[in-house]
Image (tube, rainbow, N blue to C red):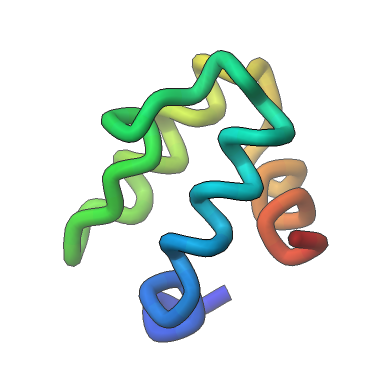
Length: 61
């Protein structure tokens, strides 16, 4: 998944992630340019998922 894909529909994906994982907050899902890996790292810790699992979850949304 590239940055353009992530930015393009991130608000929609963010809402779906929050529905699927009620523990997530807007701060957890804040996407800043150049900070994609940092955001994924935080999500990995909070959800207990691997980077690959997170990519699959987001791709399936």
